[in-house]
Image 1: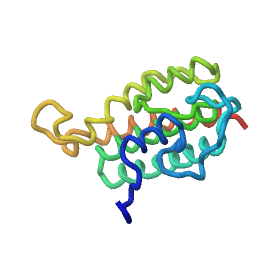
Image 2: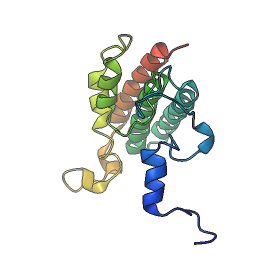
Image 3: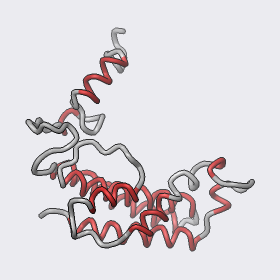
Length: 178
């Protein structure tokens, strides 16, 4: 095993990274903030550093979605908008103290945050719209019929997705602790 990228056996990796919570973002040891909190999925006081990283990436993804829209890549613009909004929602959950967030459903992320915060406006329809493009905007077998995502999605679809993602990013920014 000498010289391999993954020196740990799979079960050892799972134990250290999932059970022991050694790498909260699964990639960078320097983002780990030790905690004495009894719940391994929650940090009292939040994780501002991780929240900031996720929100910055959400903003970057929204810029990329706008570029894809301008370039006529409407399917990709829809997916990037979904990714932007999902990362924004994860950022506010990290700020609220969550340590591991495994779902990709914006609707579920929104409902989870609304359990503990009253600053988030009603954006359920926007979240559901974006949830619906998570698979279908990328995979030919995600759509019924013979069309592929690049043929199926229109400029109007992409505009709606970008608008929804923008509303979610704005709401997250207003809810983010200062």
